[in-house]
Length: 235
Image 1 (cartoon, rainbow, N blue to C red):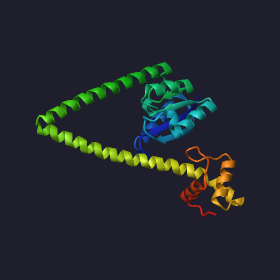
Image 2: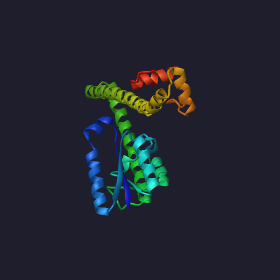
Image 3: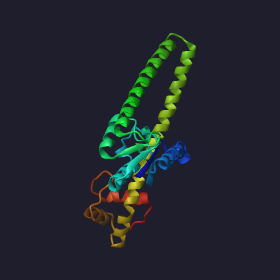
Image 4: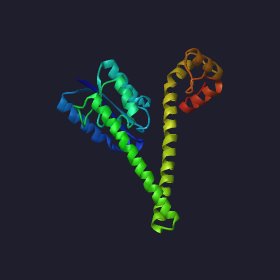
């Protein structure tokens, strides 16, 4: 059976450190050897599990390859695909997939497992909220230990939000850089063919069907920003 391996970690930092990826690779390698799977390709995302699988760049590529090669998508654990049962259900309609830690499980079993896992996360969230409400109530009543815990939790949340904002900015920048790089060849081709003004380049790009990152037609100012981002001397 031809399979496509898909790996996911939640952050770029985890991806660079290999944290979690090595274990995922070992799970899939062991299952492939035990089940006789032929791993024809592998893809790796550094993205939150809250992002829909189809919206993750490498996952989308993996899914497309599975459809094209009539292959099965394989993940180490189900939550590497998604923690949302609706996402899992949608994927089941798109491709066949297997989970290395339970390679014999069929689609129906995986759907039930996803539903149970989502329900358990809901219960955990409810218990956490109840415990936090009780902690805050004790802090308000003067419990110094509870007050200290609330303060530490607040400080940790602020630090986490700051890190999340940094990661979000980095993700936006990385996406913009990838798009800009995809436009380098058309820009250079235009220069080679004699485009010497920003207006001429904008007209050429629009005529060739290229659009800005927001899907709009180019204007001279957008061309200027693009060539500056690419570090291209123009004209």
